[in-house]
Amino acid sequence: MDLNYTDEQKAFRDEVRSYLAEKLPARLVEKVRLGKTLTKQDHEEWHAILNERGWLAGNWPKTFGGAGWDAVQRHIFEDEMTRAAAPRIVPFGLGMLGPVLQKFGSKAQQDHYLPRILSGDDWWCQGYSEPGAGSDLASVRTTAERDGDDYIVNGQKTWTTLGQHANMIFCLVRTSKEGKPQEGISFLLIDMNSPGVKVRPIVLIDGEPEVNEVFFDDVRVPVENRVGEENKGWTYAKYLLTHERTNIAGVGFANAGLENLKRIARLERANGRPLIENPHFAARIARVEIDLMAMSTTNLRVVSKAAAGQAPGAESSMLKIKGTVIRQEINALTRSAVGPYAMPFASEALEDGSNLGPVGPDYAETATAQYLNNRKLSIFGGSNEIQRAILSKAILEL
Image 1: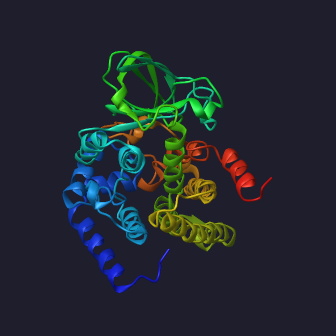
Image 2 (image 1 turned 90 degrees about the vertical axis):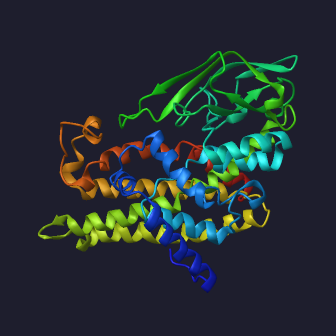
Image 3 (image 1 turned 180 degrees about the vertical axis):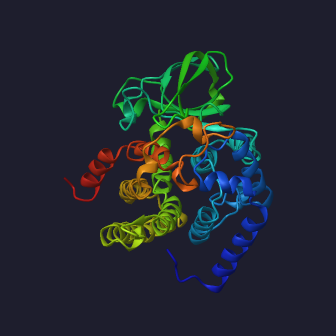
């Protein structure tokens, strides 16, 4: 979406474009454009490049080492990143835990962890969901029992994205069974190398072990690793989720996906003419583009409110629903556009060094893998059904 930027904002956009053109490695661009799996080293390399420029944490205040950008600058940066096919910034430390520590963490936690997030010394993952406690996070059963200066943690987390790379995990744990379920939850920072922590990958339908199960067996965690007050973790969890669900709209990813879809529709042919000239297909593209433009406007309003110190409300749920539906529709249209090339699916063929060779044109190689993988979008971060229930209560008062 093209906004009416001020001259200053246009200058910032041009600065970002120039920097990306100069510093973004071409091999990373190729992997992102083709939907290849990015390694931990790929992510770390790009994070380090952005951190050197001071642009890794655009949402952080300058006092904590961030760029201190306003909402429009962040919008411009994210838009230019996706247009340039840059790797996404892994959000768990930078976009989720960082804001929580800045608002609720102790001075010692801020001084220790925030610089390590920026430097890449710590790779964080999120320990929220459990078997039986996904969208209903208040049902978490992982326990943390006080033992002197430590908590003893036992339980299991699941769907832990990129947990195989992480050395740290922020967790919701149950420290009390008294009162309402939300009242007995605490927020702990746990070293993944602690004795008793075990990570088991979950191989998804696209063939990738993107998510994991994490088990805790009598894991000792210092009390000083608790963020905020004991049994007040639900407050911090909700604060984090408002940021996650705002960002989860994925406007930049949707824009990039839409442009890729249009490119494919111009190359593929139906009845001797470019697919994009087919009235039915063109109408479906137009419909999703209109929805994306409307969502982009709403997303910017919500981010602007957050920048002004207002916590995003039910709008976050609305963005989560609409954003995931749009991205899934783009994936479905892309898969439809490549036609028979979307039928074969061998995950091994997508990896570097494979002897299987490409299946069809390069843009068709990962169409099915992305379609399958992104079925998760309407589930994680709070399922769309749960978000609709939130909207019905908060806005419609049903």
